[in-house]
Amino acid sequence: MINLKIIFFILGVLISVLSISMILPLTLDFFFYNRLAVFFPSFLISSFIGLCLILAFRSNDKKISVNDTIIITVLSLPVLCFFASLPFFLDKNITKFSEAFFEATSGLTTTGASIYNNVENLSKGLLTWRAILQWLGGIGIIIFAIAILPILNIGGMQLFTQDWKEKDFDLHHRSKELAKLVGSIYLLFTVIIYLFLWMLGMPAFESFCHALTTVATGGFSTNNNSIAHYNNTLIELTIVSGMIIASLPFTLYLSSLHKGLKAFKDSQVIVFLLLVCVFTLSLTIWNYFVNNIAFFTSLRLALFNGVSVMTGTGYTTANFSSWGSFSTSLFLIMMLIGGCTGSTTGGIKVFRIQILFLIIMKELKKVNSPRAIFSSNYKNQLINDEIINSVMVIIIFFIVGIFFISTIFFLHGYDFITSISAAITSVSVVGPGLGSIIGPAENFSSLPANLKITLSVAMIMGRLEFIAFFVLLLPSFWKQK
Image 1: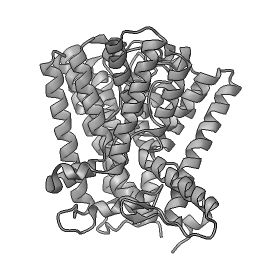
Image 2: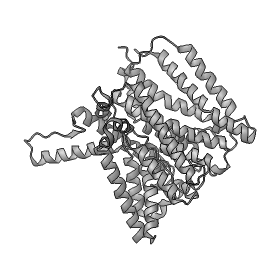
Image 3: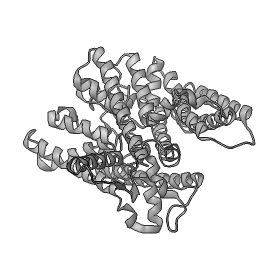
Image 4: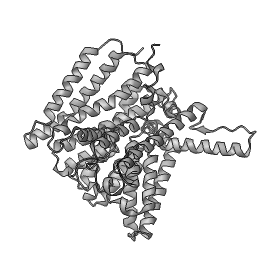
C-alpha cells in the first residue's frame, strides 16, 4: 500500500533543504546589491510549503516500501526544479517561467545547458544559486545511483549492490551511512578543487562557483566564454582532473580506504579512462592534420573539451562545433556514452556499454557454436537474463527518447545536427549542443517555450534513468498489496 504520509513528508524535507540553500545567494545579493526581491520571496515560499508538508505529514511510521521509493524518486526532481526556478523567474533577466524552469532543471540535473545570453550580467547571488543547484544535483544523483537504483533493480544497477554488502574490508554500510561517507568525500573534492583554482589565480568567488560545478560535472560557469575566459593551462588541467575524479564511481573511493589503489582496478574505470585517451588522441590528430592547429594546442583543446563532453560537464574552451564532421561524430558518441556508474556523470554509462558488448560477443559465439552453452560475467557476477533485460531496456529508452525529441525538433524546422545534439545532450545531461544554434558558442535562449519544456522533461527523465517514470503508468503498481 502506498504510504502518502511518508512521501509528502520526504518531499517537504527536500523542499526545506532547497530553501535553506537559498540563504547564501540571498545574503550575497543583499550584501552586494542591497536586493531582496529575488531570493527572499523564493525562500519564504519554499520554506513555508516545505515546513507545512513536514508538519502535516510527520509520522512515527518511517517505513518506506519500494513503491514509495519509486514515487518519491519520480516526484522529487520535478518538484525541486519548480521551486528552484523561482529565483530565476523573479529576476529581471528572465521573463518566461519556461526559461526559469529550464535553467533550474539544467542546474539540478547537472546538465549545464543555459538560456542566458550574458551570464556576466547576473548578480553574484544568481551565479551562486546556479552553482549550488548543480552541486546539490551532483550529490543527489550519486546517492540515487548507489543507494536507490540497485534496490529498484533499474538498468542493471543490481550488479553494484555487492559494493556495500557486509564483507570484511569492503563497504559494509547501510544507505544512510553510505550517503554520509560519500557526501564527505564529495565535499572534500569540492574544497580541494576550490583551493587549486584559487591558488592558480582564479578569483575566490569564481573559484568557489567553478569548484561546485566541476565536482558535479555540471558546467555552469560565471563567464560567457566558460573556461576559455582564463586562457590558463594549469586551470584547465585542474578542472580536467576534477571532472575525471567526479566521473569515477564514488563507492570506489570508499573501498580505497581499505584496499588502497587496488580498488581502482575496476574494468569500468579502466575502459572509461581508455575511451577518454582514445577520443582525446583522435581529436588531437584530426585537428592537427585537418584543421592545421599546432599539435600541443590541439592536444590541449582536445583533452579539455573531450573530457568535458564525455563526462557531461559542458565546460568549453573552444567552439568545437567548427572542428569538422569527424569531430562532430565523436562528440555525439561521447555524449551518449557518458561516465561511470555511481558518479555525477550522465549518459548510458560505460558499464552498460560493456554489458552490451558482452551480450554481442555471447551471441556471436552462439552463431559459431549453436550447441555450446556460454555465460558472461561482470564484476565476478553472472550476467543473467534479468540483468540483460534491464540493461537493454535502459539503452532502448535512451535511443527512443533521442529519436522522439530529435523528431520534435525536425518538425519545428531545425537541422539534423541541432536536432540530434539537442536530443542527446538533454537525455544524456551533457550541456551544450552542436551546430550554430545551440552549440558551445551559443545557448538555448532562441528555442521556443514548448521546446524548452520538452528538453527540461528530457533532462529529468534522462537523469532518473527513464524506467521509474514508466513504472508509474502500470495499473498493477497502484494496486494495494
